[in-house]
Length: 161
Image (cartoon, rainbow, N blue to C red; front, side, top):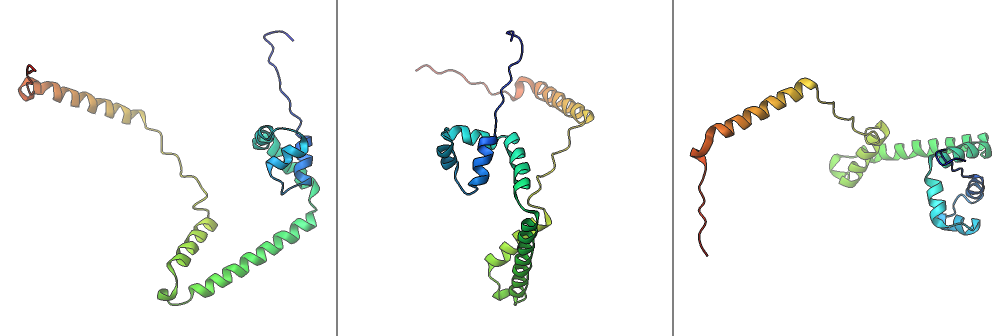
């Protein structure tokens, strides 16, 4: 390899993927101990996009589709039951509903609607015309300050100490 050729660094994530899939609830410290690697290395690898992509692929291969459907169905039933209970509690007179419950329901409703999870849209880029207007206003301001001249200036004399 010559001096100017780019060097490549390849990391095999297979050992980490195997350990993570075999021990899904293990902490990063435990995974590092099991692998005989440093906690720092495990943390860095698990934060990488490549690791996350490979883990998603491997999980899809390992997890039984029927089991995934059953779990999803149970979560939907749990969600529906929770919504029914909330609707019943919220059907009381407004004075009997706690402020905390009302706020939490509003927050949940906003999350479901996707309002809290979305990032605010970026502000529009300033147009060149707008920048020209700002430049003209700045020049006019500078001219006004200069035109006032010395009549508005306050003279400060140095006093001997």
